Amino acid sequence: MKTLKKCHSKPDWDDYILENNGHPLQLWGWGDVKFAHGWSVDRLFLYEDNEKVIGAVQLLIRHLPWPMRSLAYVPRGPVASEDDREDLLSALAEYVKRIYHSVALTIEPDETEYAIPKGWRQSKRHILPAHTVILDLDKPDAELLNDMAKKTRQYIRKSASEAMTIKRVRSKEDLNKCLEIYNTTAKRAKFNLHSNSYYHDVFNKLGDNSQLFAAYVDDQPISFLWLAISADTALELYGGMNEQGQELRANYALKWHAIRKCKEWGLSRYDFGGLIDGGVSTFKMGWTSTETNLVGTFDKPLSVFYGIWISILPMGKSAIRLTKRLFKRQ
Image (tube, one colour):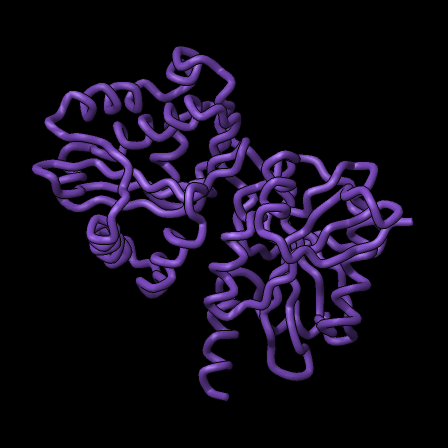
């Protein structure tokens, strides 16, 4: 008999996620970040015969206006073997419908192949991008370099020769300086940011699973790159640079430093965090000849209002922004 039970122990949870190839977004600290900013969080173990843990899922719940009630979402999970996946998803859907009355259960697995059980639907809308670049860190440095565009290798060498230092960001003061750079980057590239308190929570609540690197000139950061890491996977969360960073192409030396650090720590996968249109994706695609397509987004409809949800309320970041606006009015 297989049953779902809540986990209330951070060490037990993170140990299981880290020991079973779980994604950084399934770690306890990421759930704490989302809980601090409007989501409810359940962490559920799948037990066999009430003794052995055979699966885990960190479930995020965003409350929605009536009649849809809520959206249940699993980022880059659940964590379970192929043999136990269907049982976990079935038990999870039943749990979500009974406890939260959600309009749908949405999952975005960290997989390139995924056999989804009957009753689920592939969704064209997503919260996290499925099209990305994932480097195999088990390859030697020389092989990774050979797989890059010639210009990328040149810029790595050139920027590494500049008079700058790359190191981890450990202080709140330097974190705030990086966030100043991020705000400048966002204005230049015309994308929206969370409040600074959100990024402070990522920094604090993820702990050692948050790794923030910066390139410095005269003890001042000019470019930064922020990762979330598990035992196997590094995920790029955020990054940016100021004008001096652009002039020195600091992002090339910085990214290569981060990649090599992840290799040194024994990680096997480095995810660039998605490819979207524009210069950022052009920069990312220069690092490999191979792009990765994860399986994407799957929905389990749980309400008669699911059709309204997918036809009127767009999924993804726009849906979350809309939800926030609706809640501000209530």
